[in-house]
Amino acid sequence: MSSTRDIDALIEMMAKLPGLGPRSARRAVLHLIRKRAQLFTPLADLMHTVAASARECLNCANVGTSDICDICASEKRANGQLCVVEDVADLWAMERAGVFKGRYHVLGGTLSALDAIGPDELRIPKLVDRVTTEDITEVILALNATVDGQTTAHYIADQLEDRVTLTSLAQGVPIGGELDYLDDGTITAALNARKKL
Amino acid sequence: MSSTRDIDALIEMMAKLPGLGPRSARRAVLHLIRKRAQLFTPLADLMHTVAASARECLNCANVGTSDICDICASEKRANGQLCVVEDVADLWAMERAGVFKGRYHVLGGTLSALDAIGPDELRIPKLVDRVTTEDITEVILALNATVDGQTTAHYIADQLEDRVTLTSLAQGVPIGGELDYLDDGTITAALNARKKL
Ligand SMILES: [Zn+2]
Ligand SMILES: [Zn+2]
Image (cartoon, rainbow over the protein chains, first blue to last red):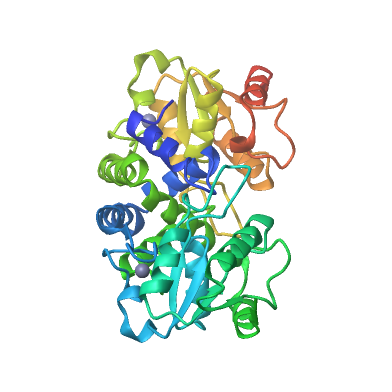
């Protein structure tokens, strides 16, 4: 290879990112080298900052820069509504829609017989705990409209049905669809038309 | 947004890389945060190293970590053959094929009436200079099989035809194809079957 070992190693590491492969990693690294001052150095700096400061919220598992995330820390978000999502990317999609004013709980996946993921591998015990200790009146199950997502929603509903009002996103989520692919308007419609379980 | 300002800024910057968009940048950043020790911190470190050390070779415009790249510096590559490519990515594609043992000259693009790119915007004067001062016997025009690539090849051939043997990659390069997309075997076949202009 004509490129030196560091450049090769950088390309190899970039190629491991989701959505990138060897070819796009090479293109990205060449682009960065050409835009050293405007992009490469600032990106490297910001990566160091975020790598040092990013952490999971101890309460909801959202990603932020403190032990308790901005949403959990905000008194304004304590409206009694708790929105359960599979993944941080789904939480971000909900926030981009801007329509939900309560707090979140990130499960970290779905129940899956195939992958041997049971309730204890997810953050379901913590969810039950939060419903007991926080002043929650409604749990909105905003899980993906996949088989595993819906299985997980039913399992959680069984655990919580006597304690709170349970709702799920309804209108607007396409069958087999994933939240993170939806536009803001669809998410807003789905939330506004949520139905009682 | 639930993510803090630094995380948002990192996503925005990653989304500017070729091949990535906002959604894949969000996925990549979440992936990095989850793999902090194995991937995020090492990637940030390596970015700093490469951002500080990467530079264009003063002779051939290949990317390396010194003023004269490894290929230009290697006496083993001084075999009288000079391979002219449009882009560093094309040089890397040639090197991956592993069949060419001479040196390179990266033009930095092609002549283009549409984009007002003339010979002086490319490294054509430097190419003519190298043919005069280095001991070059053959110039291989390994330009993309696009209209602009072939126009550029003909222009260079006109400049150099009395001084050296001119050849071009022939067999195997598909019409409209670009070097960086080809497999190693195709590049090898094209080089071995190169034809005299
Ligand atoms: Zn939180
Ligand atoms: Zn060089």
